Image (cartoon, rainbow over all chains, first blue to last red):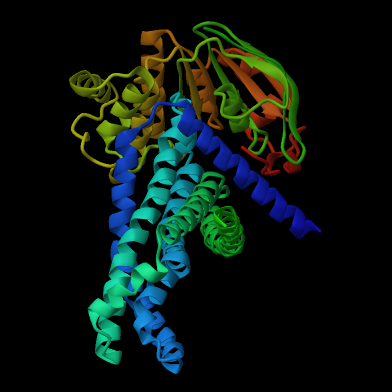
Amino acid sequence: MKVVSAILNDVGGLALFVKDVFQTGFRTEKNVKPILDQIVDVTTRSFTTVAFAGVFVGAILVLQFSLILAKYDAQTFLGGLNTSAVVREVGPLIISFLLAGKVGAFTAAELGTMRVTEQIDAIECLGTNPIQYLILPRFIGIVASSLILLMMSLMISILGSMMVASVTYGIYPEQFLGSIPRFVSFGTLAAGMFKSAVYGIIVAGVACYKGYTASGGARGVGRAVTQAAILTNLYIVIANFLTGQFLDVLSALSKGNAG
Amino acid sequence: MGITLSGVGKKFDRWIFRSLNLSVADGESVVIIGPSGQGKSVLLKMIAGLLPCDEGQIQVPAHHLGMLFQKNALFDSLTVRENLTFPLRERLGIRGEKAEALSKEMLSAVGLSGSENLYPDEISGGMQKRLGIARALIVDPEILIFDEPTAGLDPITSKKIADLIRSLKAKKKLTSVTVTNDVHRAYQLGDRIFLLSQGRLLGGLSPEQTQKTEIPEIRQFILGLKQGPLTEATVESGGPE
């Protein structure tokens, strides 16, 4: 019972914190430069990792799909299936996991250290809203970067999987690319972007919340970082299921209306 | 601008203190001493508006309040100069050359000229304290709050810092509340000295009266006696500071 209460307490605290961040974002004048700085910082810091992951995720999917498609002599569909899986599912998931490990942990540690060394109190004491000054740029930076990184990793993943498909299975790049429009529509891209945005909000929200509410010196910061990493991944998996269901319902409704 | 505390209380797992009353007159310096774990720093944070009251109310008429934190709370990703231009920009909207000139003047006043481009972790503990004082003062506050301003410093640096606080405060005729465990600095900095123990504020006497007082808790604390009303449990309870 205690565990359930602790989890509900944590989720409630996180929800209120994210609400506070959104309200601050709408209420106060936008700090454009720090937000842009954060977007550039998070994107450049994570790009190499995401690029590597993109290439290999694409390659792995090629190997898996081609085994199945070969049974039906349908390897010409490889590019489309592969890209659709990356855009809808694997891309947003992998990017958010990587962001959670890299940027999320860094943000939780940075904010946690600022909290336990009373730097956040000092900012507040100077009459500045720490949510606006510290959290908002990081929050928007992580969410915007996850969308940018999805697009980047998608392109890299297509290139990587196209190369692997060409070298391993002799599928021409034109064949590979030609099948993409059959499987990937604007709706597929929108679904991927939607998932990425949701996961980005989770990464940013949990990391900022855990760091911002850290207490108890170095041990407290360590605890905040660990909790941020574990909870982010857990919430992303849950959100993956929920967003999947939501998008399926949306898709069924739109088909129903079209019919 | 004065400060008034009316029936103030704070609760974490238990009540740290309740029904505290205190009036600090305009331009007055009040020092609060007392054993660790009695909530002295908590009380300061409540006066600074960083923690809410769980009962009673605190009236601090001025929004221009400067605070020196126990561990300085300097912005470690900013240089010494930027630690001063940040509050100027954020609090007073002063930027550019004017901010640079004001920060230079303040650094000179606290004896930190030449350290402008260093980071807080590149300067000594005494210099960090000076920078913390400079940051509290640069926003031209009417009220100053000092949390253990000389903690962790050697006696000579400690006296220098206390002298610096006294001279800067006298120059600007500021109201201040200071928390310290250093009795000598309390005598040096306070117009009135209180002891916070077991949820009560005792004393409120001048430094001279404090040294001669017969109030048993204060007497035990300033003389460092083992026996007395401040039991070991009280002294070493280690609650939130």
